[in-house]
Image (cartoon, rainbow, N blue to C red; front, side, top):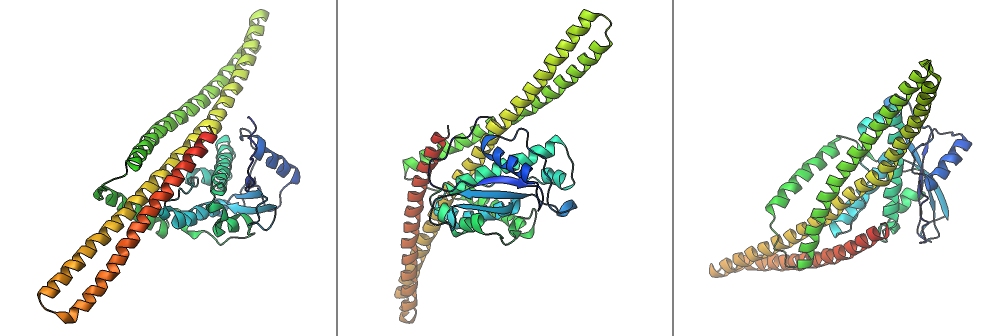
Length: 384
């Protein structure tokens, strides 16, 4: 695989290496650490989770090298489990997403893949799963620390520096909190269908449509590439089977020239089998995984547009409530009830403040999204 381009900024550069056990062979560890920067993981080293049975989990070594003063040391190493990464994303999303910041998405959970690792099933799919997750976590961290605001967030600093983190309980699959989040997402989807925003900014209207189209096209392309990878792997297996059959036929052939030709054919097919498998790995790690990242990133981008719509809706609701309070005041004046007028005036003043705050919030989130989209488009151009 081609070597990665060097990072020229002075920001932190976390690298993630799966840890086999609390005590690990130093030779294997050094080899794995080298592969973080130079290989895509087509042939990762053998791995084993910590713990026993279904209580086992995979720990990852996160090494950060930086010259920034916000960090206590120039080089830091900590161990994190997958739930820690999900916990970090959850904290950042709840803190920044409502303000219009594009929070880099964390890799998705895979219960089936991790179950194979937990039960100790040693096959190529388990090894591929571990390396796929390691690589995805590394890309997620890199995107997070490259964000100028999130880089200095206390949650990020704690994640990269603290030797121990509180257990991230909100990431448990199908937990009570998880079910609640699913219900909230369903409610948000219903709200999106009912909210009709009168978009007065042509730039936002154009950008939102642009990212909707991009998302649809990337999802189609991602599905096609994943199908291509599966077919390449299947072709590799079938080629290996054909090579084995040709070799067996050559060994049993009495005719010398034909036997030699079959043996040469078997050797060529073995090379073709490896070529097909290498191409499948390249398509997966260099193409399919990158496309999957962009699908999740585009989902995050669409999320900030939704947050802007919610902010606008909150502002409109405040304006509607202010109008009702003013109408109520007019009725009290008409009915000559001075004892209730002061309370009505106080409520009007309160809602006038909420309307002004809603307008400021909407202007601020619009400004932030413009800046975030500019940064997002610049970063995607730089990685092409």
